[in-house]
Image 1: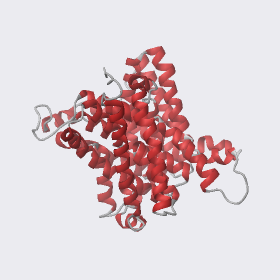
Image 2: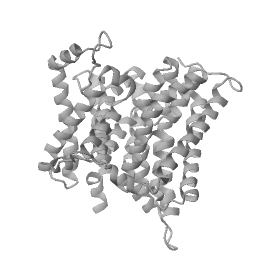
Image 3: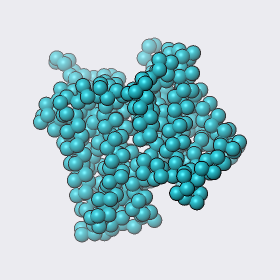
Image 4: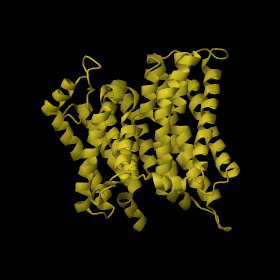
Amino acid sequence: MKSFSDFWKKEDWQAVWLGGIVILIACIAVLTKAFDFSALKFSTWGFGESDTATLAALGKQFAAGAFWVKTLVTVAVTGVLFTLGVKLQGGSVKEYVPAFLGLFALAFIVRLVSAEFTLNRYLEWAFWALIIGLLISNTVGVPKWLKPAIKTEFYIKTGLVIMGFSVLFSNIAKFGLYGLGIAWIVTPVVIIFMWWLGTKVFKMDNKPLVITLAAATSVCGTSAAIATGAASNCKKTDLTMAVSISIIFTVLMMVFEPMIVKATGMSPIMGGSLIGGTVDSTGAVAVAGSTLGGEAEKAAVLVKMIQNILIGFIAFFVAVFFATRVDKTGEKKVGASEIWTRFPKFIIGFFVASLIASFIIQPLAGADQVSAINKVLDQYKNWAFVLAFTSIGLDTNFKEIAKQMQGGKVLWLYLIGQIFNIALTFFAVWFLLSGAIFPIPTLN
């Protein structure tokens, strides 16, 4: 009976149900047009760099009643769902609610800052969420009353289930074997290489950290790190370090990789595909790709979305590998129950959401309706992620990270792994998209 109660008491399963509720309501709202379920999204504002992005534009947003209605809807939906989860987990609602409101206020500031015209062009909200959290945790410290809301994995797992609806299998058809070759062949090779480098060359004993960092580097940063970390029983402190390193270098790559692409004279489709296969965050991929033009942006996003489908598969294989090989003790055979225990259940929600969108909603309602639903879901996913990234910053202490660096091995593992990832992805991009061997596809 205890295992049956896991369906509503355990964080992994709760992420499936909570994410599913948001997806269901969004589908009903869009398909029936009965009500508006849109979450809060800041319009771009700034200090005169653009005719439309001005301080007056910000004032106009705040003066609009619809802005505050959407703010209340966003707070209510996320607050009620996550509070319900905490209650079912046995946590204190009395402590969580004020803490959540405080965390949401920080997330509100993050979204506001990241919508500024200049900042929005170069650094997405994930970076500012991390920075604001880090500033608080490494200066004045995190107040005790705010700590109950720091539930990084819970927010990201729920966001990943919501994100699953946007991972359409039809994207594979759009880019065909080109996208599969770039995203699905390179990724496992990089993971295997980083595993060998970390465990055999650097002789790192912390194997969950090695595989988590490898997945973060090769797939999609934070999302893959959370899934793989859960499958390998990675410690929370190690997971935080892997995510922090990934976010910091994602920002650097997002800024400098397009510059390198332009300097080398790569075609837009090649440059976009390289960015999609190597820059971790989907949002950062879109921003970096857009600096090279529309074709590059589309190629970048398609490669990243095809790569995102691997999250669930990688989490499954890591769970099997760690249960049967890495953590195996004695002569006792590891059964399916142990693998099931290790497998991150929220990945099931991710896959189900993807399958429903790909093979039920899209065939019945059409691609335009799926796109409209995803526009609604995208903001709820973003709010779940910004709560998570802010929590990561609040939960990260530079002194503690320095202690866990194992003499710099962790950083070197990431740097060498990422360089190998970029080199191998570039080779795959050249092989498939340069026109020297295969015809160059057209992206409409």
